[in-house]
Every structure is written in structure tokens, then in C-alpha cells.
Amino acid sequence: MSETILEVKNLRTYFTRKDGVVKAVDGISYTLGRGETLAIVGESGSGKSVSVTSIMGLIRTGRHARVQGEAVFKGRDLFRLSNRELFNIRGNEISMVFQDPMSSLNPTMKIGEQIIEPLLWHKKASRAEAKKLGIKLLEEVGIPSPETRFNNYPFEFSGGMRQRVMIAMAIIANPDLLIADEPTTALDVTVQAQILSLIQEMQKKKNTSIILITHDLAVASSFCSRVIVMYAGRVMEEGHMADFIRDPVHPYAQGLLNSTPVLGDARERLEAIAGQPPNLKKVPEGCPFAPRCKKCMAICRREAPPGTLIGPGHKAYCWLCVDDMQQGREVAENA
Amino acid sequence: MAKQKTADGHMKSRSHTMTILAQYFSNKAAAFCAGVIVVLVLMAIFVPVFSPYSYEDVDYTALYATPNAQHWLGCDAAGRDMLMLLCYSLRNALIVGIGACAVQFVIGLLLGGISGYCGGRIDNLLSRVIDIMYGFPTFLFNLILVLLLGRSLFTIFFAIGLTSWAPMARLVRSQVITVKQSDYVEAGHALGASNTRILLHYILPNCLGPIVICLSQGIPAAMFAESGMSLIGLGILPPMPSWGGLITTGQQFILSYPHMILFPALSFAITILAFSYVGDGLRDAFDPRQIG
Image (cartoon, rainbow over all chains, first blue to last red; front, top):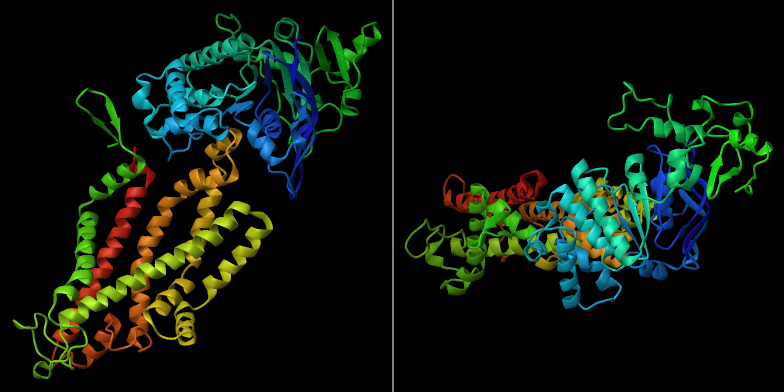
């Protein structure tokens, strides 16, 4: 693998509430190489978004929230940086595209101003240069008559156009890492494809690393080279996208794949995973997926499974794989 | 309403402020009242300049004079020109109204803003301070302050401002809390905006609507408070006239010389109504459901 750009080690984000501690992210680790595209998939409330907002330092820590672990970005642990250093990284070296384009733009500021802001804050260009670049980017992301549109306000844009604006804003400073938090969830399918190809094109041009958060496996599989499946704040399975799609190991990952509709599939009903995701205040002991798992064994309810290597770069957190290990496969270190 | 076709067929965009103004002036009553206020302000400034009389000039030949060619609105018991008295009352009321609002705005914005933005213990503490101010009988507090500070135009609006900022602070706090949690503020943080930047360019402009409305409605309220104080004789010091004072004297002559209460009461009512309508108009214009 190429140069590592982000290494997350044992990330935990806990929120303290009156009636207990919400373990939104409970010890996840992964690495991301330069130019690589990583998908984080999982159901709603599995901690996907919190895991990246924690890395960005957008969680206000204090009495009510704790973020632990390490997030090493280009050799610096993001959790140990001063506010000033963080300001310099955000929007500059790491930037983010948010889920809801309708509410993620400042309604009282002109589109153009918002797009060029990161450049001005980080003193990468003069106002005139920034404006030129902003207009060029607006054109690149497919906004017609960008000169006039530059001076429009967000309420004059449709959802798809706003998401394009968000992308222009996120990439204007040439970040090394782009985090896209469900960038297409609020958009219809045709616009979704356009937005994704836009991100992809930009990635090719600038060799940016991307973390794509999604609950749509179809989107993830067409777009990403690696995948992490999260459930109840933990990683269930991770590996190369192709291996994962061909041969998912974890029962939860299998369930996810089976519940993804495939066009032209002759089956009449989609298989859903029975039951509900656990309440994050009381995640069951052992494997969090055990209560919903069809292949649940006694040990699953007692002890959390260790990570097991089941192929090159393909790791699963499931006792079923640990059994396989006894038949002669190698085991990864307990992560 | 936000877009206009220009000659070359491109969509021309209006700024947010322009949109709100256009929305405001499409409301006929509000537009009319804005005009009334402009006229009133001009009167308060220029009539005393061009009038041959002053509010202190006493004309012994015209005691209790009814409206005539010399004194258009008549005279009061001391032979002072009624039009002049009204213009000075208006002037004082405007100074008190706007001054009190300014005081209210500064205190409310600071306390409410800090409370809402910082949250946690600071918020808890400041919220209790605001609660205490809320619970205090405002009028009584006004009187005490004026008696302590001395009676002058300045102390009166200062006292009114000092006692009426609690609703403003509470409004600012709730606005800041709402805006602070919005996605675009988080997006701003994610793009590397500093805290000052977030406060000035993200939170403040998005809170401004309700604050402007609250301010515009605070002006007539402050005028009312001042008149109330004058009515019981603790407002602006005579011989400087004030509506409250004029109405108190006028009511003694309500049967014999009705013009002495009619004109002050009428001008007071017109002013208050105009400001209230402008406030209502602003509230409607800022309503996001009407924009876009």
C-alpha cells in the first residue's frame, strides 16, 4: 500500500447522558493510504458519522462527551493538536462534505463567498485569485453561468446544486483527505450518480484520499476500494471491496448485502435483518450483533470476538471465523 | 420574489436584505407606517428649528388658546405653543425609545450571546441572572434607578434600557443556541472557520431577524414606560415637555379645553401605533416562510 495518510487507532467516542453512557464509537481502528477510497457502511446509528466528526474534532469534548484514541494524520495526532493547528488543518488538509445540502450552507452568505472562504482563511490566495478559482470550480462541478451564480444566495439553489457547491467548497483548498458523510443521501438517483462521479474525477486529478460514509452498499461498491462495516460503534468486518462483495464473512455483513436490492433479481422479497440495532446505552455483552444473529453461539453472548484475518487485508470480528482459525488459518492480533 | 430577469435574460439575484425589504414594503400598512415614522422624525428634528416659538416661550395673551392662525394647535395653561410642546415630546420620546433600545440591545446581545454560545455552567449562571431580571417589577426598578441617578433625559432612557433587557437576552440566547446547532455552523467549523468567524459571520447574521423585530417592538414599549413615569411626575423634568406630563395636565381641563389633552393623546397614539406596525411588518418580512 502507498503512503499512509490517516491512521485511526482504537477510537472511542462516548457521550454521557443522565441515564447512561452512549458508546457511539467503541474502539475502531483503520488506516487509509494516499489516493485510497474507503467506505464506512452500516445502519443508521451505527456510529459512522460520529467516528468521522470525532476525527475532525467537531465533537465538543468535556463533561458530556469524551473522545479517546489516536487519529494520526500525516504523522500528527489530531487529538493532541492545539485549536490553532486544528483550524489550519480543517478545510485545508482535511475537509468534509455534509449529508444534508439543504441545511449545510450558511443562508445569509453568498455562495461564492462561502466557496472561497477556506482559501482566504488559510491564506492560500488573494481575494481576486480566490474568486477566479471559485468561479472555475463552480463551472467544474457543473453549475451553469458560474459568474452570476457566484453572487447568489443558497436559497436560490436546488438541493443537487447546493451539494455541488458543498463539494466545490470542500475541494477548493486541495485537501489531502476528503470526508464525505452520506453526500448523496438527500439527492435523487440521477443527481447521486453525477455527484459521485464528480468526487471521483476530482480524486483522480488530485490523488485525494476519501472516506465515504454511506448506508448504500451499491454506491459504496461502485466507488470504493476498501470497506469497513460498522455496527453499534464497532467494526464488524473490513477488507477490499471486491473480496467483501464476493465473500462477506460476518453474518451482519451478509445480512446487509442480502438486503440490498439488485436490479433484475428474480427473488420476490428482499431479506431483511430481523430485529433492531441495539440501544447504544446498553450494548449487549460480547458481540453486539449476537441478539440478531442467526448463527449466534454461546460464546457470542459472553465475549467480544477478536479480529481474525481471513484473507489478505480482509478481517472479520466474528467467532465463526475464530473457529475457522483452529482449522489452520492465521489469526490477527486482537485489535 | 427573489429573482428578476435582467435585459440579457440572466437571473439577477437580490441580496438577503433586499429580499426582506421588498417583502416589507409589499405590506401596505407597514410601508405607510414607515413613512409616518420618517415624517415624525423629520418633524422632531426640523419643526423646532424653523418655528418662531420655543417650548419655553410663554405667551400671556394666549393662555388656554384654542387652535388659531398663530398657534396652530393652540396653547397650554401657561400659554406655550402646543405644536412646539408636541414636537419636543416627540423628540424626547424618540431619544428615550431609541436610546433605551440601544442599551437593551447591547446588554441583551452580550449576556444572551455569551450564555447561548458558551453553554454549560456559564449559561446556567447567566440564565438565572436573566430570570431574576425577568421577575423584577420593571416600573418600580425604573423609578428607583431614576431617583438614584437623578432625573434627566439620559438617565431615563438608561434606566429603561437597564430594566428591559431580559426578554432580549433570552431571545438572543435561544436564537444563538438554535443557530449554533445548525448544520452550516458545523460545516463552517469543518472548513476551518475560527470561533470569531463563526460568531460574526455565521451565528450573528442568522440570529438577526428576531433581534431586529424585538428591537423595533422595544421602541414603543420604552416610549410607554417614559410616558408612564412622566404621568406620575417622575419622568422628564419640566419645563421640558413629555407626552405623559402633557396628558396629566390636559386631563384637568378635559371638559373646558379638550384640545389640551386631545392633541398630545393623538400624537402619542399615532407614534406608538406607527412603531408597532413597523415592528409587526418586520416580523412578517423576516418570516422565512414568506421568503424565497
